Length: 137
Image 1 (tube, helix red, strand yellow):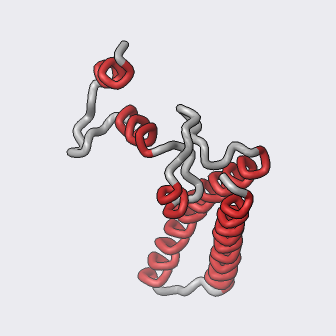
Image 2 (cartoon, rainbow, N blue to C red):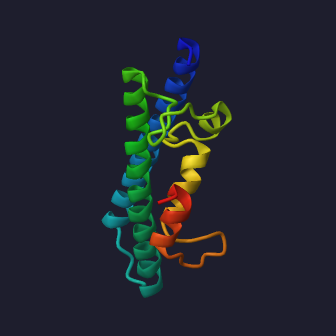
Image 3 (cartoon, one colour):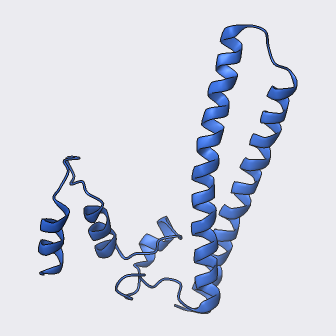
């Protein structure tokens, strides 16, 4: 991968990281505003409690994104960016443009998802049989 391409992905990842920080700052401000004024109406309190649950879920999702972004940035610095964590082959540029935090090439991503236990219909697959079919053991 060229230095120009690496700089492109680095800027893209840094932009995504800054976006997460803005979202967290906004959520924190909203949370502080709702905790200062607790409405006496039961329905209003339930709405606020529901909003807090959603914010907590988003924070977990944001922390996962944050970790993936920082991992990708570290790979840029170490020269490992754009290479599949499993097979070491280059990850397709179109895939990296769509998902700059991608750690697997498409083939290995599909294998990884299959090994997670569900096929395209959402039916549980026997993990041992699937590994035998995928890896030929």
